[in-house]
Amino acid sequence: MAVGSGRGALIILEGLDRSGKTTQCKKLLESLRSHQHKVKLIKFPDRTTETGKMIDSYLKQNMKIDDRAIHLLFSANRWEKRLEMLKDLEQGITLIVDRYAFSGVAFSSAKKGLELEWCKCPDRGLPKPDLVIFLNVSSSDAASRGGYGEERYENTEFQKTVANNFKRMWDEWKVIDAGGSIDDVHQTILNYVKSTMQSVDDKPIGELWI
Ligand code: T5A
Ligand code: NA
Image 1 (cartoon, helix red, strand yellow):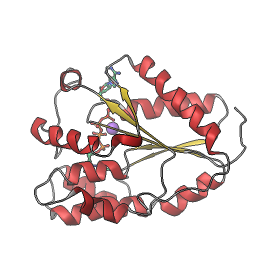
Image 2 (cartoon, rainbow, N blue to C red):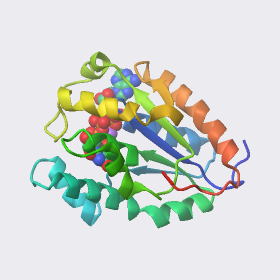
Image 3 (cartoon, rainbow, N blue to C red):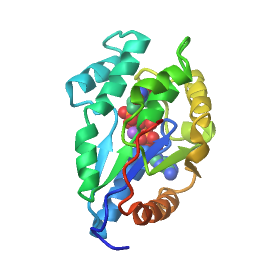
Image 4 (cartoon, rainbow, N blue to C red):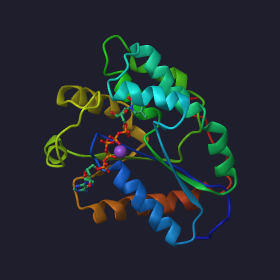
């Protein structure tokens, strides 16, 4: 694979809680860097910005926020990264993103009264991923990875609804079995990522859900 030709690829890792997104994002970053690729890691929510601090406080159950208002905050937290993302991609930097608008939609639409289509609207027009990898784990595999913590959304019933919502969006994704060993899952991800990086070339960056 030629290094430094064409634009970078926008790669998203999504998945259920404890499916290993963060673990795999880090391994992917190391592996691509060791082969001299220009690559960066981004994580949503980005808890360091002003919107991110409110989201963090909401997730830690320190602050109550209306269901629709928090949905829009999660979306704003992505929009404020847009220009930086586009600039990086145009400069040939591949972006590995730990959660994106799909988490936004899957979690919010698990709440009463929030329709999936309504939830998609605020994220319409964000940079469109070149590849979405969904880490799929059975609830028993996830359970063997330790109990849920104190954060909002960390309960089995809610997670089941979230899983069903992800399935309503996953037609164009690479859905992979994340129940294997960390190294096996990494190899599968790496193969998909390498072929995507080769295929983006100078194709224009698309707009999500448009
Ligand atoms: N959210 C997020 C919204 O509601 N709207 C939005 O728009 C967005 C972006 C926080 C919450 O916010 C919600 C979703 C979340 O509820 P977060 O900060 O990304 O989002 O959540 P985290 O708690 O960081 O992520 P997860 O709990 O989902 O964990 P990961 O990243 O999937 O899993 P990871 O890599 O940390 O691994 C979990 C454990 O499993 C082990 C790891 O060592 C670790 O101990 N593990 C494995 N064990 C065995 N085999 C393997 N293959 C393993 N891979 C990892
Ligand atoms: Na994570």
